[in-house]
Length: 349
Ligand code: 13P
Ligand code: SF4
Image (cartoon, rainbow, N blue to C red; front, side, top):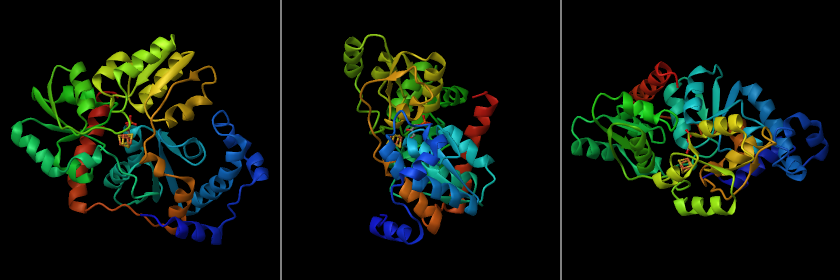
């Protein structure tokens, strides 16, 4: 676990990180991307970190890959590339930097390291896990293979390198249906998200069998929540991530990956939208879509929220928290991820 007292004293020796209204004012171009959701006082506390991170990034020849669930000051303030799991995995193969800072959760950093073994991949907080990735090991994959002999294993990218290595191919929420449909066998094993698997099964002609994992953020929504909300707020578009249970997805107007959700709202510009997913999603697109009123409750991912500006600056300063993957395991895991990327490109996803 990161010792935050040590983190703070290390940073205090090197940087002036006190809230600074004058500096915040001078960085109005950056603030303009988030001023609908970040108040000026908070911005004055973030601005010194944003400035320091953007400076040290150049010194280290580093890029920051920010997932769509990062808070707005990370998403808009310091990320060089933002996107969903698939987009970030592809970006990790393309960037020319020496260092990748993964602003997301641990499996994403592992995926970047698997795809770019020669790069240094830094994780601002090694404890930023994922309930899905933690729900299965390679033994679980073997258990499923023994139960369904000959069926290919499609593992969600939200898994450890060990599980990816034990699988035939990976998928993300943006390509899951296409990947499953592209398998030759009639029966396809999906791990570890039972709800993503059931949602895929509803759109596929395959017999999809699954591991009983779930996302602690999306499993909390119920179809009744959505029905009630629609009744109280007629005219609101309900937009759900496919990690939600199938009856929730059935109740929604649209379901898609985090980038699919952004595209849908950006194209459709509904007057009112409720994003049935992690809270930062709506915050990150609120400024670009002033005509959309984002309403309703949301759920926070406690793992994603472990990533803060302070920890990003600390790892760039110290080069601590380097993600390592055993090379033999990485080699096997890479095949599963590359098969997914190649197939997605071939299918035009
Ligand atoms: P996507 O960004 O691929 O939709 O995944 C969502 C997620 O839960 C990542 O943790
Ligand atoms: Fe894992 Fe769910 Fe958090 Fe994504 S939102 S990192 S799937 S726990």
